[in-house]
Amino acid sequence: MIRGLSFDLDGTLYPVSRARALWRLRRERGLLVALMAARERMRHEPPLEDSTALIRRETELVAPSFGLHPSEAEARLRALHAALPAALTKNTPPFPHVRVALEAAHARGLSLAVLSDYDPGDKLRWLGLDDLPWKVILGCDTLGALKPHPRAFVALAERMKIPPAELIHVGDREDLDVEGALGAGFRAWLFGKKSAKTRAEKIFAAWSPDMFDQI
Image (cartoon, rainbow, N blue to C red; front, side, top):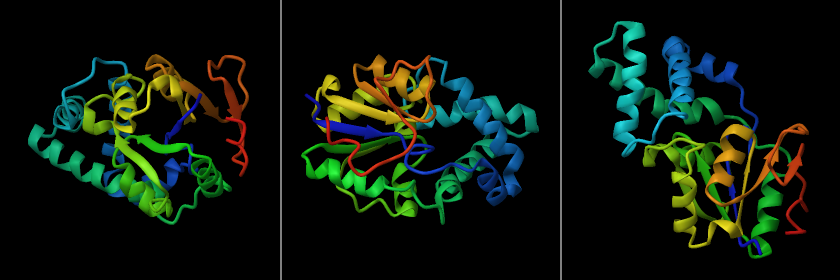
């Protein structure tokens, strides 16, 4: 029995354009590229205590390459964190049929949640999806553990008050969304092209209004 759905945001609910984000943040282009590389490395490191420890680890990885004092690097990284949601999502519509699919799922009694990097609340507002009946909106950063570490998935299930086995996580990355969800006891769907290597129980290439009707 499935009682709830959790969703990755970037690349799952809307199309990500890194080129657009880099242009909008062009004054910090180099630092942004370094931040993205640092976070990919951190995904394979042990989890940290909280968001403060997470940004300090980012600072440790990024500051030396730019010859920055740690305090200056941390201040600039915090500013990037604050600016990224708008840079990624401003004036960007969700994928076709996202809203109607989510509304239909909720109408059938399924609880909805978001699990994403940075501030998912800001991104939902820019996407015009913040008014949907989300039960939980959770940023991995606040927990100090980026996907695929299971900590954020477990915390999401606890806040939804639904056992992980009764949740499906929907995301666009095998290494982060599918592996992270399965590691926490969720079921997993993958949004993207068909792949023989996926561990997801379902792969879909486009959203449709009735996609959750058979759950």
